[in-house]
Image (cartoon, rainbow, N blue to C red; front, side, top):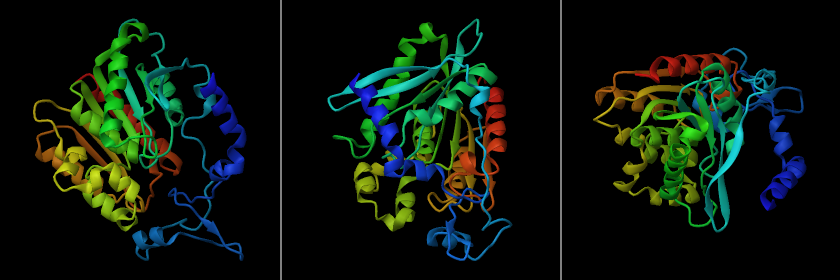
Length: 329
């Protein structure tokens, strides 16, 4: 009851704290934020301009009227249940489960993990995706919450244990939701792309990974991101100790005894996570003997490639096709 009241208050107060304004931000077709100038023109932030290195692709300074990749109208009636799967003294963790519609036998599970720099975001951001795969793919869709930076005694080990415990919860309740937990797919964006890759590399029943603008080798990323000036993130990753950080870099955790079909999306205009992260992971996967690896690199596109750019529907369609093709392999 207390949690529900807090959520309602947060929603009511959101515009006062800038959340409403964030939803109204001006972007271009590449999902880059545009800053309006007094003369009516627009500019980009200095880091994005640095990544573009003087290039000006078509429409770079033109506002884009984005449309939701999954309209609410097409998944409005899909059943989705919120459950609490783990409790800490200062917090409870939830997940949203959308069982497959009209499934007569247990179905694979697609687990979405939200981004937010390991310190923000929530499971609600992928509820639409969970409902979408439940209705249009015939799989169960799940969106998971996890412990984040800023909460009591949280580091990457705590986060990873949460996610593995979420899988255990699904396994314990497989019959209730008609789940085939021997066939798991993980998908997520940004920090969620990193966590999804970690899960796909370490959960024995993972069959598919789809990473969107994700991080796969932590040490170079933390040097690239804000020139390494994120002490709270670096502490979360044990101050990037050379040997220890490898244990949290999916590029070093590729399984040798099983196959995972991997699909990666990234834009070369991403000022938050360099696109070489996807290229390096794809190369390492292939060298390790993984047979199905797709790496989609989009010239000029920013960090929100799969969510707020004009390529979002294309990426969603490619994801669904990949999922349907490889989940049963």
